Image (tube, rainbow, N blue to C red; front, side):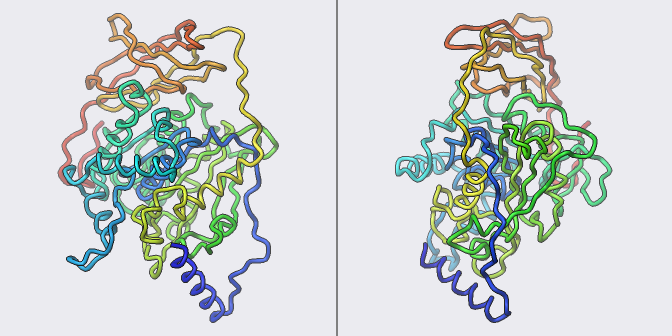
Amino acid sequence: MRVAVSQQYIVTLIVAAVIGVSPLAAEPAGLRSYQAPIGESSISGISSGAFMAVQFGTAWSSVIKGVGVVAGGPYWCAKADAFDAVTGYWGPIWRATGACMKGPATDLHTSDFTAKADAKAAAGEIDPLSNVKRQKIYLFHGYNDAVVDKAATDATADFYRHYMGDANRGNLFYQTALGAGHSFVVTRQDAPGLNDCKGNAEPYIDQCGYDQAGIILQHIYGRLNRPNPAQLAGSVKSFDQSVYTGPDVPDALSMGDTGYVFVPQDCEQGAPCRVHVALHGCKQDVGDIGRRFVDEAGYNAWADTNHLIVLYPQTKASPYLPGNPQACWDWWSYVDHEDSYVTKSGSQIRAIKAMLDALTAGSPASDDATASSLSAPQWVTAIDASDTGIDLAWLPVDGVTAYRVWRAGTDGAFQRIGEVTGASFADSGLTPQTTYRWRVSAVRNGTEGPASEDAIGTTQSPPPRCNDPGSCPIAK
């Protein structure tokens, strides 16, 4: 692996010398530390960024609190097969653009992906998989997605459910009832340059009246302050990614020279903050669409009022070695053709982790102070609804060890349906077009506090059958 990368680095040096550009910058401007607690970090992504978010969140499950997956498949989906002498092609790229994007489900075996994860965990190449059951997982597939089939996100759901089991089912919310195309979805309806809700083209940001960034962040962290509709107090800063790709130059990993980070004003001034990593998809890097994903995906507005720093690492198109002409994240081992791409030592995973380490360096020990008495969770809210599920979030209660969730039909009695450690719960297996009520109570070391006020939510209609994604009408 290192030999191949070193050869690419030498080629880069030669090319730089020929065109008269020094590959060695003066003193690169890196990320500063905000002393954010690394265990409160989270990650999300769309398309290739979603595949990478799954890989990174699984490899570093000890520090990743939650994962948002928009149109992405399971861990090690493309695998890392050797050169196929029969077809004459290297295997993973054909699997990546075949079964992992188009299905069918019969070609996506959960046991393959979990067996690989188990083996990597046993070898110490990724964190223990017992961490995955506590992660908050948001999954999304739009029924007008003409690029990634629902079979891929279904396989992702099966991968996570394998490790969560029924006891932790409330940590996973899967939204499939929205008619979006292959895109990250935003609330805006008339923004110039963005797609309508069925779009499957650049910049891969669709306007569906759906606040995907806000839902992802609240599913991971619990109920958050509403975004400020006025101008953001924080700002987007650029940084030199070569500081974090070393010993390789960014080009050797198909990563851009420059990355971006949004920092709220209060974080800049020393307030305690957390970090969310947002990964763009193929052809969504700054080289293809400018800063549209950084500025318009919707993360920054939520981050600005909630002490959240948002890290936006960047890939770049690479027509030669490593072959990555659409600036995708490496989810088929294009950098070194080895299965390390899904582990902590994977070249791009290592670079992202180095960026996260820089932002969280020097963070103080976590504060485990407990409240003097258990209070009822406040602002329990249905933040999202599919045809068979409701996603609930509430304000965290200090010092609790768990939350118990109770559900009732509109006129029925409440029944306990689950328990979670974080301030959100994804209720599933519900009846379409039906209204339910929920209550949540906080638990500390076996002692249960008072129940919250009722939250009310209604499931959507089942999504229409869509045989021609990209052209199906949007259900109202």
